[in-house]
Amino acid sequence: MSKTTVEIRAALNHVRSVTVRMRDLPSTSRRLNVMADVETLKGLLERVRKADLPDRDLDGDLWEGAVSKVWRYPLSGPWVDTPHYPVPCITASIDAARTAHAKALPNFWISSGLCSLSGHASTGPDYNGPAGDALRAAWPEERFHEGFHADLASGDSRYRECYAILDVTLQALLAQAEAPSTSAGGKDA
Image 1 (tube, rainbow, N blue to C red):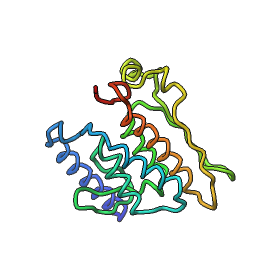
Image 2: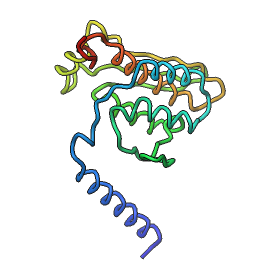
Image 3: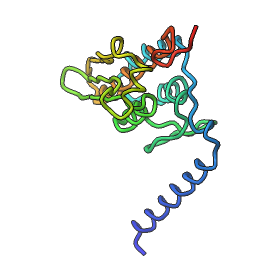
Image 4: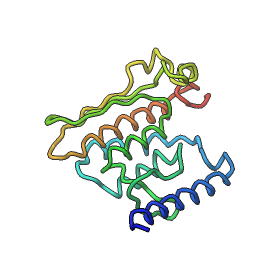
């Protein structure tokens, strides 16, 4: 058997064991709809806007302060183990940043890019998708139709696109946390 075949089989066995463990958990453990607090999100947003290079401490803080509040399972990619669960490199990997965005804001569209001037991203509720009615109820079109946008100066970093994705994700989560009523997922006063 070739070395590649052995590696593939080992990876598949790992995926199968993780799938079984996830399936055995009660559904309430799989998805927690606990919103991050406003001050935590504001602090994270400020740090994301100032950051330039991958930052494992920021990865952990973003995961603990924002993404894990709505989704607790690991993403694919490089990991750093924490006492609770592994944390993906969301400040270094566009794929990990996009997956974190998709898990934190299901049924939102996202567009991002990088040029010599900036790392940029935009996101918003996908009102035309299959979850359009639910999104209109949770994220009223008159308030959120324009979406959320970030245009971060590129500096000298290819990681600015990751940070732009994280910026718009945090903007949306912050809008959700600050919502005074049931719109955008807020709680009734």
